Length: 504
Image (tube, rainbow, N blue to C red):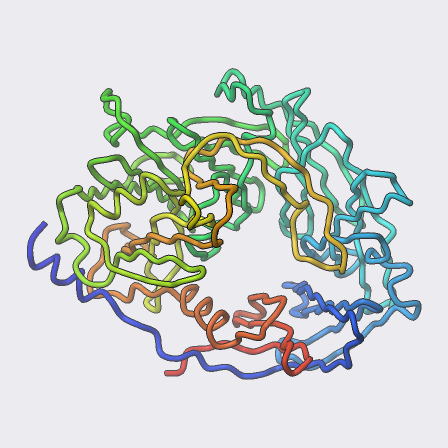
C-alpha cells in the first residue's frame, strides 16, 4: 500500500453538520402514579398515511396522519384496554403491517387465565374508514415450537419457530384479510452441520432481523444469526464456530429451504493451515460483506449475495500500523467508567480474537458504504474480569417493543457462543467496544479515500443518546421519504415526533 493512499485514508475522517430538528407532533398527558407509555408506528406506503399507536396503563389511542403530519383521524376504544390485545397479564408488541383490514399491530400475549402457560400472537387491527378496532385474529404456538424470528414482508406478517423434535422451521403467516397459515419446513440440519449437544433452535440463537437495505451499527451487527428479508424470500446468515458463514435461503412462496456454506477459499482459516479464526457477515443492498479475523490479519470480503461469487478482498496485516492512519480505529469501555483510545493493528486483532466479532453497514453523506467492523460485548468487568466462550444459559423474550407494565414471558435455552463474553460474579456492567471503519464505493466495492466515515446512522444514534437524554421508547422511522424520530419526553411528560434533516 502506497504512502499516498495511507495519507488519503487518514484524511477520511469527517463529520456531518449538526442535525436539524423540527417538531411535527406532540401529545401531552397527565400521568397517573404508575404511568408508563409505549408507542408503535405503522405506515401505509400505498395511501401515504401513517398510524401512530400510543398506549398507557389505562387506554390505547390511534392517530392517522397525512404525509405532512396533518391529523386526519383519531380512534380511542371506549372501554379502555378491555377488548384490545393489551388486556392481558403481559403483552409484548412486535411489529406492524397493513392489509385489507387496515393497520395491524402484532403482539405476543401471555395470560394464564386464558391459555394457561401458552403464548399466543394476537393482532390488534385498526380501520379508520369503518371507525373500528378489534383484536380477534390470533394464533397459538405449541410447546414444541421455540421462537426464532419474526418479520413483516409487504402486507404479510411471518412468525418463525423451530421444532427441536422434528428439526423443522415452523412458519406462521398472517396474510390477506387476517387469514392465518402454517407451513412446516424441513431443514435436515444434521446432514449440513452437527450441532452436537445443543438443541436445534440453538442454531438460530442470538438473532436479529433486517431488510436488505437496512442501515445499522456494530451492536446489531454483532449478533450471530441475521435474517435478511426480501419481497419473496428471507436469507439467513449464520456465524458458526470453526465454520465459514452459513447461508440459508427460505422461499416464501414455495417454503423450500436451500442451505450452503460460503466459499472462503484463500481466507485465513481456510487455506489448509490450522489456525483460529472468527467471522461475521452483513448483507446490504446488492452486496454480502464478510469480516474474517485470525491471529495474523484481518480480511474483508465482498461477495455477490445471489451467486456467492467473491467480488473483492481486502487484507490488513498484523504489523501494518500505517493502514489505519487517522482516527478510524478505537477501543472504548462504556459502563462505570468510559475511556477511548486509538489502537494499533495488532491490538485491534487481539481484541477481535477474544470478543464478539461483528460487521455493520450504513451510508455516508455521499451515498457510499461505511463498513463498521470490530467487537461489541455487554459483559461484567471488575471482580475478576471476564472470560470467553462456553455454554451459557440465556433468557430470551418473545421479541419486539415493551408494551405493558408486566415483564413478558421469556424462554430459557443453552447455547455455545465462542465469541461472547460471560461472567456471573460481582462487578460493574459494561459494554466493551472495539471498532474500525472503512468506506467502500457503493457501485464498484473498492475502498474509497477522502470520504466521510461517519454514517447517517451514527449521527442519528449520537443525537438520540446525547441530545435527548430524557427520551424513552425511542423509535426511528421513515415516512414519505423523510426520516423521523419519535420518543416520550419524560421531563415534559409528552410524546414527541421530530423530523430529522441535515442543516446545509
